[in-house]
Amino acid sequence: MASVITGDITSEILAELSVFDSVGVATRERFESAPPEHHPSLVMENFQSIIVYVQIPENPTDTEQIIENMGRFDHIFDVLTSLDAVIRRFQDMGYEARLIQQNEMGLSLPQAGAQAGLGEVGGVNSLMIEGAGLTGTLGAIITDAPLTQSDLAVDVCTRCEACVDVCPAADAIFEMDAARCIACGECIEACPF
Ligand code: SF4
Ligand code: SF4
Figure 1 (spheres, rainbow, N blue to C red):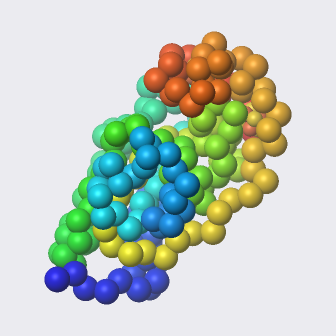
Figure 2 (tube, helix red, strand yellow):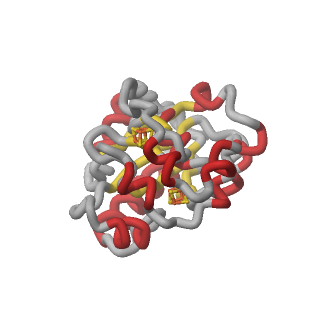
């Protein structure tokens, strides 16, 4: 039988993940209008919350390195320790919790990041983060623990479409087909933020 989690536990969980540059929580209700083929319930049927974290690169102009590290954190030991501690903490309280792999079961991490208040989804379906443009690397934990959701970020992406203009897969992106992305990094360099 799982114990009852309060907002205070949410704060503690987020504090445990302070190794990241930014962390937020999206609760299940934020995904009510998500298309069934991209819904987080495909990853965990009874999920209640998704914790999304982001790492901003030390050198935001090194696009090659940003692309190489996109979606992975295994080169940062502190990160792995924090993620492991949080997952074990949930499990000790009787909840299910696990990492979400990049685009697992069609779930969009940028969309989850936006619902967790970390930024807004820009023109090429990447997460536009205030002060960091499209350079952030995202990861997430999905859990059936009820957490307190973060406030949404607003007025972050200006909809200038500079990222779309340079994207060689723009037509596909407009159809939300992230699989067509060739990881060229052009959008990262084009975003003015
Ligand atoms: S194809 Fe290139 S420009 Fe388009 S979304 Fe992917 S990385 Fe960005
Ligand atoms: S380039 Fe413009 S539209 Fe694209 S993410 Fe940046 S601000 Fe938003």
